[in-house]
Length: 239
Image 1 (cartoon, rainbow, N blue to C red):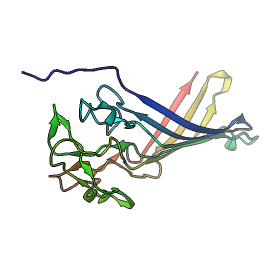
Image 2: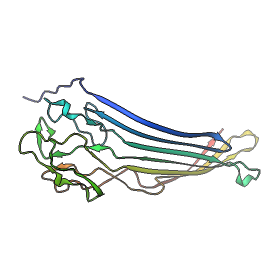
Image 3: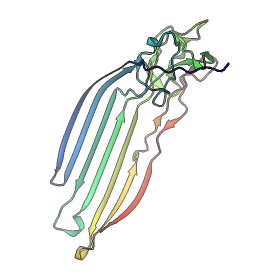
Image 4: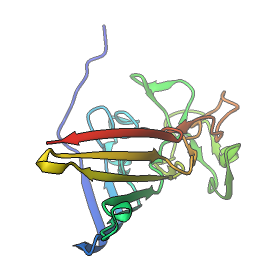
């Protein structure tokens, strides 16, 4: 017989956050907005097929769904965004109608769940036993967490919770500068823009290997997320 899939609407979720926003409306050529959010999202399942880049699918033990309660797959503890626009106005033609803008996005890493090699319950990976605190104070790409703090269960299910560790955070800075040229006789305008995405070419690290047991790369980060610096030149005619 093949496996029978059972889905029930019995999930539990809880979300708390504090948010601060500082904003200046566009005046005298300047606009900016800064937002910071400190939040925590908890649930027993983040979606029918998990959610986020490191989601843990289904339950480790279908007879104990409450053991899955932990940080949501999409939980971002800290999230900071800032954007600004400045446009010049001058009597001198060479100095008027220039516009510079930028935005920065920084957020802490999403959680991820450790698992052991093989499966225990209908294809769902079993979690390891935790024997000490695997979080390191001096994390690096070669050892993001301490794999020695986790062991493969001799039998049954592991006691490590869902989403107990966090992947690296992400930072991106985008910049743009351009100018609007107004055509004579109401023939419209032409805008020239130079844009740089991830202007600092900052590498955002991917998630570490999360398999305990036969894998020798547990805790090792071998990939990055997002794009490298991208520069583009564009023009737009409006009429």
